Length: 184
Image (tube, rainbow, N blue to C red):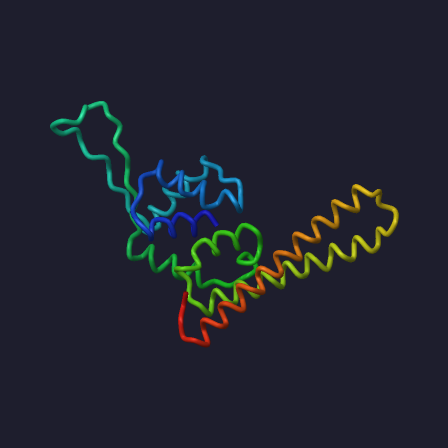
């Protein structure tokens, strides 16, 4: 998930580590708590694989204080672009879970329409299964639950129902765009 996010952001533009950290935090914040301690090892691994390149800090020059800290700039390589496309084209179970889906959704604009549709449909199936399990658990518990616990379960069920409706709308938009021959 972090690999997709880093490569996707660097595909938009080169960035230094601090800027990348900020963008990742805002991008992934809604989907997952982001550990800053995982960013630099990920950058090192992506660099070693040849998917990103690092530009070393520029040496002190006229008008720049010699002790001023300069930032490394990370860029996506041609191999990195290919690898990102491969990652975004994978439609396996991890594309439907909370973390995988959130990262993929953030880069849907860089994903082929047919893949977007598969990911949305897979996510909807996953959420519908979750909803069915919640309904069963609530029915089995019956009146044994106190009022507050029942309300909590019903609130969770409403949230899942809302996500199913949202996913259904996204799927309908994807299908409609595909029929018109657009990829918005």
